[in-house]
Image (cartoon, rainbow, N blue to C red; front, top):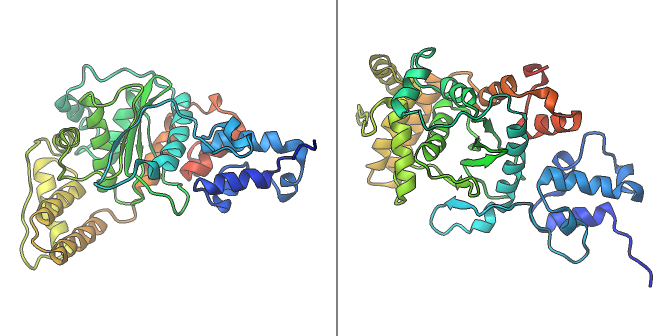
Length: 349
């Protein structure tokens, strides 16, 4: 009986069948030096399969076994916080990709994990505000790294897969916070990072059970989500039940920005956090969808006024570059992180 020779094209087909695009497979799943000629070389099939399995976090045996379904490499029981009606299977690929990146980052983290047992919300605020005027994105992310909790921004998902906004999980015996919302606003990403830290402070995350937040929302019917929101609000504003509301019927984005700056200076809160808090609270009380959309347009305009020329994902990952021990990572792993996290080599070389 003649044995069928598996080809790289077969591996591509199997990965496409579970939701990856061919373009994504070539750009992310294989190193830069991989060529079309390598695809045709049977002698490097196993090498290519190993790259694909490692970078896309899939099970190598399932990838190489004919007529088998490709499975993802995970021993975790996942805890999903989802919108009503969302199928958890839709988050399999983004969760697997984010987990692999987080695992690499955790391995390269220089700072031992010091734990959160001795850290109250107030103490964290005081620690951050020793160097910052308020608890802002820079201060919160720097604090997390200082106690051995890596924070990264990862949004390099295949174009047609479902996405989540935040995730927190243990890798290499330390928690890692993954922010995945693709948004340049520091205030929006700050709330997600604070929310994920809130899950850790509240004991919602076990070492064998990553927590994936499809969407971080203020109004929920989930007790854990409400508790994490309360922690985030108290951490960022200083009071868990604080609601700013200076809304007037005909307020503009520029006026909202000015009022947010005034309140932020008075209360030592990041201006973008104030504007976001006002918009969230007002939108939550809107009677119509059109009114809610109008409120959010004004809120976003205020954020753009308050946070000009700031790229929050780059800020998070620049801090990551400062805290990784790059000597622990080989060249191919570094290339992988550069691709997946959209890193500029000038940030760490």
